[in-house]
Image 1 (cartoon, helix red, strand yellow):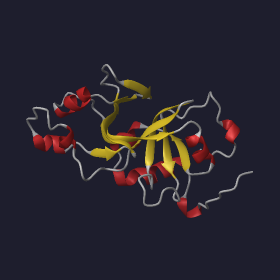
Image 2 (cartoon, rainbow, N blue to C red):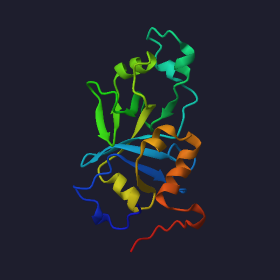
Image 3 (cartoon, rainbow, N blue to C red):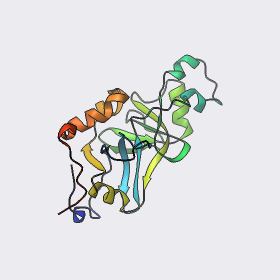
Length: 196
């Protein structure tokens, strides 16, 4: 979805539960370059989401579980850790399927929930967590109207989210697949900054 009229964004419109797909010119060399972001909340107070295709290399899931009585470190290392965004990069957050719902879990939409408690980290480590999960450090945040302006300026495409892209697509393929699902072909893309 490409937006060309700011008045389409009003108090009734919400991007909660959608994917944002970074356009090729956005944030070259930064954390949002070629990123796909799942929007966990969007409203009058701004927007918050998690980047879903940038795997962290300097930290592992086992780093989050150092104080837990882990029995099988190899199993912990099989859980990928993602860079959720540039804000509070020491805070762990988990996007997951709704087969796991505890106090502090918020269902976002379409069978996808978000949790940020130590309990879910422990449950994942002990193999009692959700079937589908994406564990991230940090998150992405936009001030009120900031994200709407970025979409208006053609920095992001908005597409419907789905569990297959979120949980079962290779990280290096998520951005291109999201573009494909939007119907936008990069070989025919021209960055136009003006609006009618």
